[in-house]
Image (cartoon, rainbow, N blue to C red; front, side):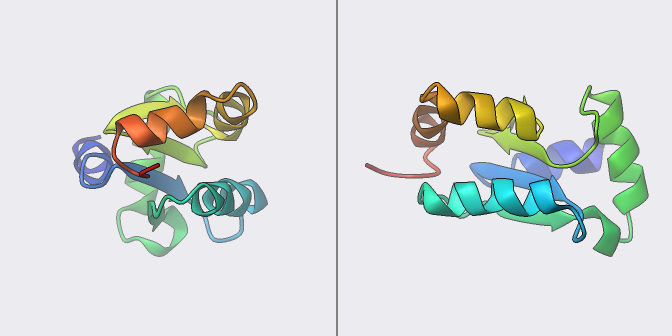
Length: 102
């Protein structure tokens, strides 16, 4: 869990993904379209990926990917991020965390 927290705090927006996950790709693209450049960590390509996946599950992320952190805080998975985007608060969260500037 320490590794997840460390990586999540290194950039304003961090997404833990798997290379074969279509929702992970969609969430990452949404962040790019909003002007953010998130750190993307693909668990299936990381030596500690399985460990990090278990840590994400223990934090309440089910399914474990995509797991999104903004400003070092766990936001949730794809359904949570999409809900935030639909109600307009995702962009503000990214601005508050200095992941985007407008």
